[in-house]
Length: 166
Image (tube, rainbow, N blue to C red; front, side):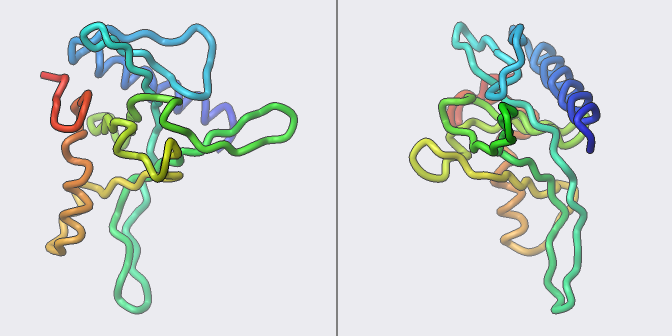
């Protein structure tokens, strides 16, 4: 994808997430300057949350020669590129944003609190893989992989177990 396409898809994802949050009853603001750390600011009962929006890439299911394979899933990278001089890849930290909004489809957005993405210290995992909820499997590990992200599907949660939407 070229840079212009990336900007268009990123902008459309930000507008979609902003619209969805407005529909849920939140006040949403966009920073005047483009910041690599977050895309939206959401007022939730007087608490301002920084939201990083990512458009997920859908990875199709694939079967390997030995019979095992990967289930269909959505994937986003949590590495940002600084464009000063030469490109430098930098991992996000817990200080960069409060919520990751993963747009999988127009009607499927996951609002994942940053605490769910921590790998060690204040460093975040480098990729998020969300199993396709439509790709139902009888395997326990497959159901667990779908269930992990289900609490954040189309719902903004402030803390684990505390819902802030409808």
